[in-house]
Image (cartoon, rainbow, N blue to C red; front, side, top):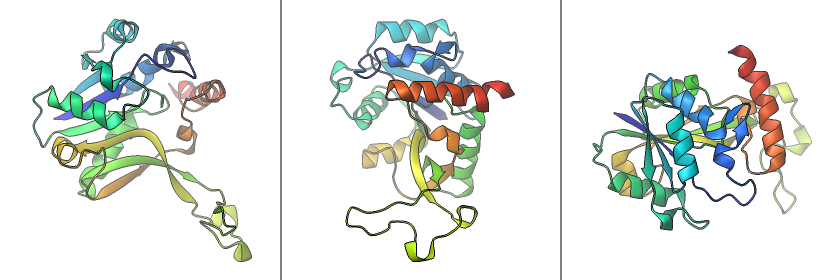
Length: 225
């Protein structure tokens, strides 16, 4: 069985009630849930929240696969790690250790159903233990000490000939229940990388991110629906 979890707490200092603020005409969390709901590879979806407003909003969608999990208050504060929420959630449910666990971020609304399905296929094909999503940054990076990180400035490559560097975009992660319980981490063992399109690198933390993400959503996704 494949299980997906979206952590969504009430507190957000940068954008109040960010997870349910309207984004392209729907609450932000709707887009990730819709993409998961439409995936043939996802069996159950949970939203872990401490917030009645988020709970009511999620339930109003009436998605058949989606359930709300009431997360512990101690794992919903500013200092709680995502791993603490994952481990709490798993401990409260009787999942099989071979079940796959998808950790999905509500603040990555540009993820699409095809991303979940293709990533799941890639994980299986590579016989990997876990997977994370990345985008490719074709930028030249430097270290603080004045040395280059990913290219030779004496032999500067053309952009079209430059492989760039993979950057974790935080859209979602896959691991088995067994590995998460053993390693206490969303990633472990042999790690596969699912490369997503460049526009998915935006993560909504500030107001400017919100404006940019909405424009990207309209251009790359909504126009194709």
